[in-house]
Length: 547
Image 1 (tube, rainbow, N blue to C red):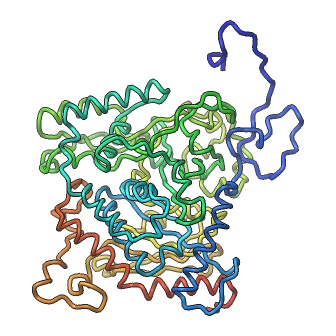
Image 2 (image 1 turned 180 degrees about the vertical axis):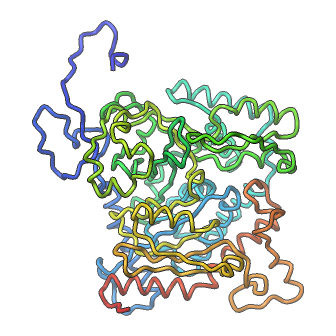
Image 3 (image 1 turned 135 degrees about the vertical axis):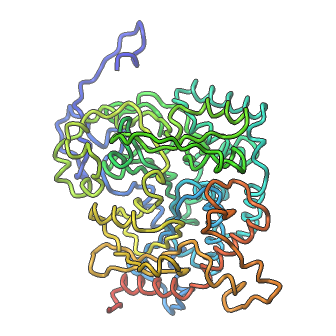
């Protein structure tokens, strides 16, 4: 690009040809004057990066030891006998932030946490994950201290986020970010608010810093999920899955990845033109809900205007909070509320119609532009990153990459599976069929098991919906509540008046503990089912299982 060249200096521009984005070869046989994939700053290909492969080798020793322990095996597991287990979480603001702690505590007590190779999240669960991964050995320690620290975040008053002093600080941070070369929008302000809510001040943690927590394989590899959208298209018409790990950020569809510290920098034709400072992790927290900050009566004071349905618009609601300060803040936040903009590292790539014959590309092909390859050829200057919950409230897609070979998914979900299952079926992504009767939907159990032995590559799914079933009568598995303890089992997670609705950003100490205890209990009370399917996946890996 001409504007990237120094003024008044003689420079030599090498002639290169546009790189083919999807590369199915490990070695390049291009002519010497071509820009070969291994020479680019964008990694092309669907295989896992070298750092993740190295992590997997190191993680196996932890998983093998844990499985031998929990399954009471007499002999050590060989590498090919070790199943890949993933913990999948879904979004839901402070509710998912809290329940994730409870669920992980339950898995820790069962020694199943050390059996997991991956943990994925979006929205509110990324708050939990970023807190945990500041400690390089968090999964090897007692989680009670972490849960106590999180309680302070969940129960403190959030209105101080909107003090004049704090708003001045936010403005300074956004101005600095803009000077660094980033586009700023409300999502960046929201990230700063979340940072203050979780840490009471500036937190310098970056996603690449989390490499310290996985360099020995001592914790599961964290995978964060978002979707890329485009102007003038709704999420139903255009969305592309993007995964974030401590090593790389990349598109599942294109098989294109950049180093995590380079995400947001300027690229052209796969080359890094201008390196920007790495994003602080607060700017990678996706928007979940602003409404909870505007007062307890926000739901009754919201105005939902009747808007015409247009085929290429993201569906939104207009919120009109009470109070002059909230109204003034609202006026400042009306520009692309939910979209974070970053320089597009695919800029300059020409999408080739041979993609339509590529099986791995086809698996993630689900946008209106995919039907006309020439419309994909011109990549936008900017990525538009939004919370994956705007499409499907799931962090599962990265776990379904065939290269990760995930055998068991512990699916910690706070929303139904129907929409996700339909998507996987439409895209021909291996996933077990899920069927729940109307009666089951009205009275959900604590745990469901789904397996599809007829579909190669389909993982075993252990599904934990957020319900309060036997916890009402038992304070621990097999331990009945006495009369004075029955109040502790009353955890309303379903009604409109629930203190745990996704707009609620502040809990009482009592409500926080109840939700953590419920989430932990649901895991512990179904330990036999978890262990049953861990045993089955181990048997499948070792070839000892017969249906």
